[in-house]
Image 1 (cartoon, chains in turn orange, yellow):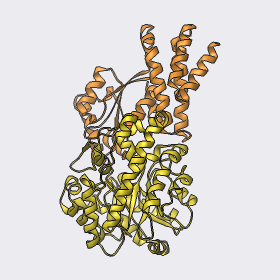
Image 2 (image 1 turned 90 degrees about the horizontal axis):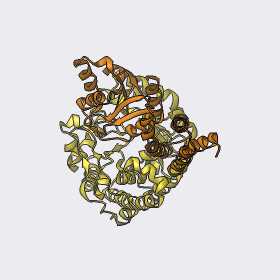
Image 3 (image 1 turned 45 degrees about the horizontal axis):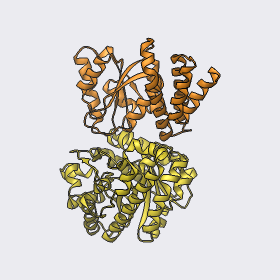
Image 4 (image 1 turned 90 degrees about the vertical axis):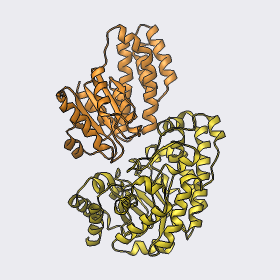
Length: 211
Length: 328
């Protein structure tokens, strides 16, 4: 199959959420000698289109999730080869829902969109303390700390992450991005966060611009 | 209640925020105390009714009650609404084996008793109980993120769970009806994340089934959808046949009012967290006036909060909201 066509097919299959087909096409592409970078870019291009459509309300959460699943399953195949060939992600980010909060759908969406722009994401899950955010960021050389909250009572805990960074004298080593239903840009400013993301697609755009 | 709706439309100034949890501050109790006691819940509704000119009394919007009845584990916070923390259905076999619990089991029984008590305390306005919608309940049983993917991968499984969720909600609503409630607010926030096509397949027919089963001239349904796609799916959600529709602050309320039939009472959408919880008297007054500027020309518009007002929202802000409506 024509190399260009196979890359287009990978992107289209990813956009359609056809994980099995994405994996088959990647296998085919690798057999035909297509470079992993091109395969990666095809998938990221597909995810970028998904992100833009999601932001424009042309597609919705389920469509993003199945595309992200196709991306993740495709990445599982090519990641070992990327590592071998020295191709690195754009950068690393840690993400989690703040301490006291167990909601995760927003956090999951942001994670998928960050992966979709080529960022390696370390997902800390829910109910994450300030100390755990910072430790994970340090252990993984993450530049960006993404914090999610859905509850008005837990959103105030986000400030602890920033205060802890300041207390340790390492505030300027990390970019802190916050988001979630009760979060506003004025709240983000008030607690000293660097960025507020009103939605997952915006979070990915901002994160990408930081690397 | 149909007459009440006619009266509402004729009123010059009308507000009905989803306001119940903040009563804990006035009662000196925690949210944990409130959700565990029918007496406290009834008293909370009475306190809110005595303090505010809301056109109806609304009970708790606690979207963990129904899932807990099915067997989900729930984390109870001291001062926040409880959260469902695990999934109990992850296969079609699980879905088939899922038993529909009695509608008065666990905390559902407390909520039903609370309504019964509230009807004795509050006699100057209708009382609405709060229930979860079918897709939102199904989502809690299978996992909220997974539910989105199951719509694609396991639609048959989702539909089994949706049917059982709907059966439970119908029974629950009927229990509220017998307890004396004048209606229910059905909260279907998770459907707000779906495409119009998926909402039509996985939410609308199930909510319609609830409405068809329980709504009558003495008991009306308020359909609540606070998702950002609600405006896109107005035609779909109107199919459920509720008498009142309630929208969240993710949508432009003026655009909603343009799209809604003029004879259907439509409510929304002051930001409960960003404004009423975290705003100031000045900011709440400002946004309330702005919303009234845009929407009060629609006689069927009733100003409300976009979703339930958080437990620790400042009462000075809540008072400011009502004052702004009164003075508009």
